[in-house]
Length: 265
Length: 277
View 1 (cartoon, rainbow over the protein chains, first blue to last red):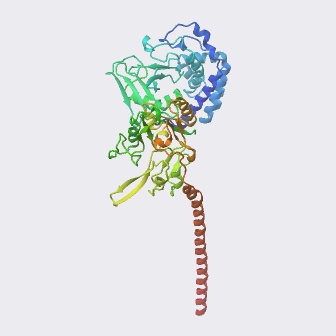
View 2 (view 1 turned 30 degrees about the horizontal axis):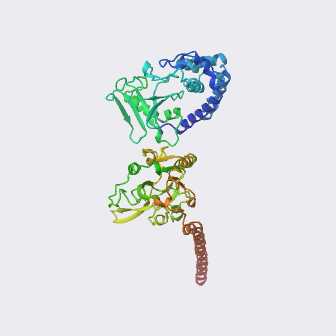
View 3 (view 1 turned 90 degrees about the vertical axis):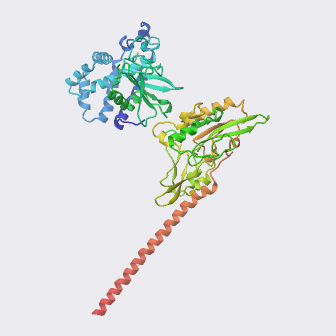
């Protein structure tokens, strides 16, 4: 797989994924037990929107601090204004950040950035990465309330965190498994099926391929205009985490979108 | 960087030759017209343009029954490779993945590697330069798809094998898998063994064999030829050192001669000047 992302940015993301794996270990696996007991099976509404994430504000702030350390190494002049801005984060604000991250409220974080004269992307970047360990623990424990085909009930996004479906892997004996790069929830899908609208008509399902990339295909649906990047990771020596695989194949998103397809059908 | 191993479990091989096709396809190797071998086997052995060959052996068991044995044969990528030892141009070396590869730019086609490979997998390819009407030779063999490994992809033969008779992965996991498979097949094949010969320091292609290695045309105890070790480890360094000594002697002689000549010239000039006065 050719890598079109700069080595520095790839390295930064790799470090973030490593940190998130460490952070995940400090979360109690049974943290969602009671919340999940109260819920019924539903694939239409992402699970994260049906419960409140029990985020520990001290842990959250420590993780944000570690992310700032990482970013300070890569981007000069960012550290002091950022640390100044983050002083305003108390337990109540953490709760607000978590809720706005779940709601994918970019506008809220842009306002925060403007208030403290920070780069527009930065607060949402921190909030998104700091919440992911909680999403991943949720994804590992959600089997009782997220079952069966996502499309059967009209859902078009990750049933756990609501991220648009855009990444799949071919594994084992050729099964297609969709992977959410955000919460790492994964579920089986038919090879010849649109993961957005459930279309199974082979005449309106096509593959886009890139010359020299034997392991990657873009599955596109003429019916709904959706696409999914499908990577045959069976050929890989080492399988990267879904978030890194998504990053490594970002050029395929450009190709699909330039051809008029969308990750949201 | 972990070490990688290609595990070939010949008890799972169905002789479909998909590995041969995948190898030709990925490495862009030309087809070679072959004479009939007297069996279904396509090539007698690996050649400069056919880097892996599935061998078909008809083997009569002790009870008189016949076994048809298939083996994916290619370079074993020895950890202490004889070809690396004997190459006078240092054209053959190890990569970070453990594969043994030939640098065609450096190869002079001397054929030492061909003669010294204990598995007889290296061959010379003939190339013709039509402009100068010259023929030259380059050693060729399986590269363990090093150019795929660099792209985080497994070798073509391992990816294409439909029965998982060829699998590729980290050394520790592969050797563990080999041990587990050996335990499974031992009741059926009492002579079963894992072929990872220590005489060449172990290999990066490890076989699970149901019969003795010689049944499959593999040497029982392959070794790096002593002559190769003497040549590379002792004779060549000494030769180089001697070359250094002689070079220094020549340079020394040149400098001293030049100095003497300079003295002679100066004396001559002084003498000539003196006569003018």
